[in-house]
Image (tube, rainbow, N blue to C red; front, top):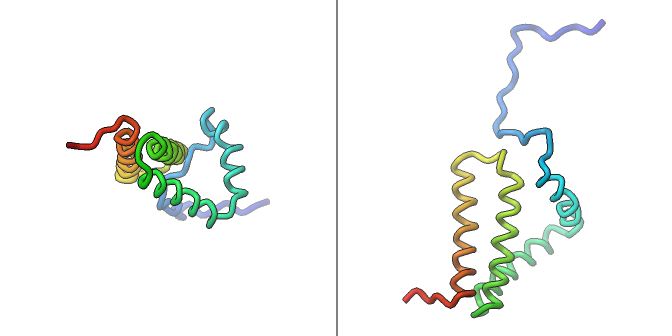
Length: 115
């Protein structure tokens, strides 16, 4: 017979919120993509994302806009996957970053030059 835990033992507080255990359809859809991405070396992934971002910023017109739009969609996808675990400030920051990249992509795609 196993000894029960003492009644005065308090559970340790969690420093971060945990994601729900039941996966949403979005998470189930994303799982194979994440598994595929996990097979890429981390350094190659970081360099590829940085190169796509810098190329999108450097190239004028539609090509640069499309590259930045790809980066914005990717960052938005990652933010949506982790959304349940983020605090309010973290959510605001992620939305701001995705919105900024999408704005710059739109300015390149539609020819806004701010003046």
